[in-house]
Length: 553
Image 1: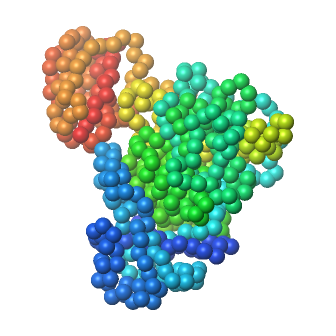
Image 2: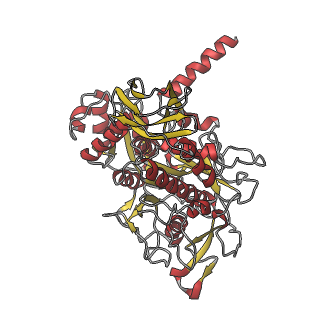
Image 3: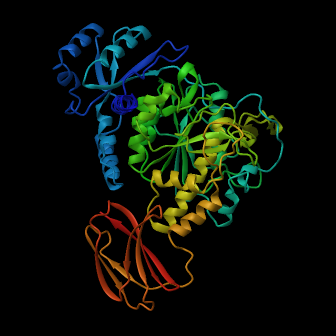
């Protein structure tokens, strides 16, 4: 009996891993949706000949006639951008399939697109073998993961989340001159106040060609003002200071434009305007079980866009949402079976030494790290103070996974900048996620439900130094060539003093993959078995050490 049960569970897990169907749903209190359909890669489109290719299926022809279907490209990225993302993904050691599949996601427009007709069509489409999944995206706005009432009064002048434990110790990084220099930030949500005194003179703007809907209320648009402030506010002599104030820019990609509400468009544009090393912040949440909030990537289409971005080296930092949902519960099994999108998902924790989960934060093994979910001093709204009655001099105590996410994202920006300055390359999304988890302050045990550790900037920076061997007392000179390398790399060491001298090769995460006895003179090593990517060659000769970066093609 036990053997049968094990086989049944294994079979079920395989089914979950293979199928992404049956996850679409209508959003509550929403009268309008749009339908996205992902087709398997066995369906090959040439250009935009969608109707021609799909009409070869008899059932699809019947559905086209019944619903008057018009097929359109779902993910509005140019072929040039798709190619660039594909090459970046391949360079990062991925197969690039996550990028190419974006071309097989179509938007279906029908006659009389009522909720009932769209739901009926999605149900029938998912019966087709060629269809991977259907996704119903609401055309009415979903509340951002904002402040949880009542906001806790706190009139301290200091942003204590910048300090050492219980904060993330960003001041340690600032003391080293680290502030996110050169890194570009993208924020996907509803709006922000460019005229706020903390942002007016900063390199902040709305993405080209996009607008903020005039129907979006201040409770939505000021949400972004707080996020922008936490990350990028002016570090002057008044107000607050942005945690990553030295970043190159911070750009809004609004979900709700004058043309209407479309989360897919906002995420697509943020990815389309990003490259490896950039950081995208998802200040969004989606509807899960019982219309409770879960990460935005719960939606299949957003998940695919996220996976494409992270495979291409773009870091995505995503709110876990304020839904108190257990992502490890049975309802979310299909979502979890998709695998990891590569995003860093942020839960909401307390602002004290306990680091417990706040009661409303969504949680589970997929949540990576936590940030403060209360008492986060930020600009915007004016519910804390509005100096001289001026809306552009307003401040608030921000909370929820809304405040937790920009705190973590700021840590990512500053660490990415530091790593790039040392190596000339960007840390991968998976490496960054693992660094934050490995060096963070552990979550407390007072409230059940995993949200992960709180980032610790000092520990993370010191770990980077250790991984790159930046603490050696005395250097040994050596040369390596060619670089980049495909198969054989030559190591020239003029002098070796210790008979136990070693040559070691490490991944960008600091994992040792090879070790050799160090020889004086010229040594040729074959590293063809290593995956493509960035590695570090370290020579150790007694107390003398030196490390150099090498790129494996």
